[in-house]
Every structure is written in structure tokens, then in C-alpha cells.
Length: 222
Image (cartoon, rainbow, N blue to C red; front, side, top):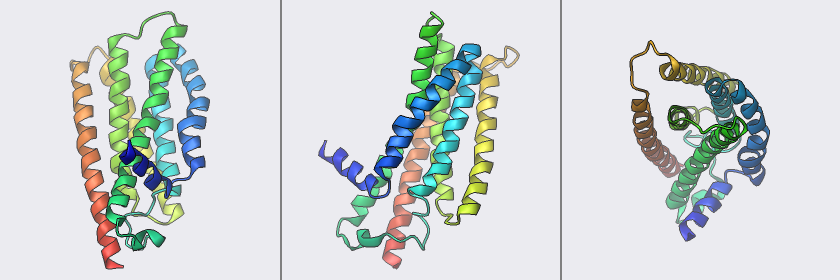
């Protein structure tokens, strides 16, 4: 519990309370009703649109938090004078990954539950697996992408690169939907859940190590 408190404190040094409020509370409150309405028309299309919007927010809004943290010219301010700088940065990176996972997980899960309740039917196993697959896929993808574009400090360049990567993620989400719903594609849909889960774990570990190593290296060079 004490370590969790340290992670939150470290993360909040880079991320404001208003940012957390917007991404974890306000955005889901506004997005979930829209997603539920779309899912009543078609659950799969509704989920794809919702995840695409979530990834767009995740990529664009990161510019106001940890953007540039792996760049050599990033200013760590007073943090670099602390004897606990390395552990402090690692706590902040882990907390950021946990917050992003919650940000990407909570809205689609709640939307699926509400949509199934409104339609008076249980969520079938295929829809549930599709939802979890999209969650792990988009979490892993955004985590990996952010590890790359956090080297970009220019606002305009960051925006263009984010739009490009988000378009790629949207295409991947649509392709995954077709893999689930088209009978002509003879690939068991069950296989995509463990694949996306394992990939998300591997990417999370690699991104954590890469970001932490880059931050420590840049600090030592200052």
C-alpha cells in the first residue's frame, strides 16, 4: 500500500489532478453513453469506434504529461537533485502504465455490461473475448507507440505523428473485428485473446525498461 502511494505521488509530479480527473472520470462519463447507444445498433462496431476514440485521447493527451521524458533535452527540474531519483522515475512510469490500462479498460467493460443489460441478454463469450482482446491490443499498442513518440518535443510534429499512429490502430481494430465476425475467416477467435494478452505484457516490460534506462542515462549526462 505504501509503495502504491509512492507511485501515485511520483506520477502526479508529471500528471496533474485535472488530467487524471478528465481521463479517468469525465471522459468515461461522456463516452460510455455514446458507446452504449452505438453498441445497441451493433456491439462490435460500437466497441471498435469506442476503442479508436480512447486510443486517440490516450496518444494526444500524453503530450501534456510525460511527453519528451526520454528526450535528452527533457528538464527534470528539482527531481534530478534527489538521491532517490531513479526509483522515483520508475514508480512514475509504472503508475503511468497502470493509469493507462485503467483508462483503456474501464469504459469498454462498463459499456458492454450496460448494453447487454439494456438489450436484456447476456454478453456472449465471443463478444467478451473480443472486448478483452481489443483492450489488451490497444493498451499494448499505445504503450509501445508512446515509448517512441515521447522523444518528440515539438507540438506540431507530435500531433502529426499521433494522427498517423492512431489511424494505424483504427485499421488494426477494424481488422480484428473482421477476424471475429466473418465466417469466411477460418481462424478460431479464441486464439487472439492469449496472443494480445502476452504481447501487452511483453510490450509493457520492454517499454518500462527502455523508458527507465533512457531517463537514468539522460540524467547522468546532465
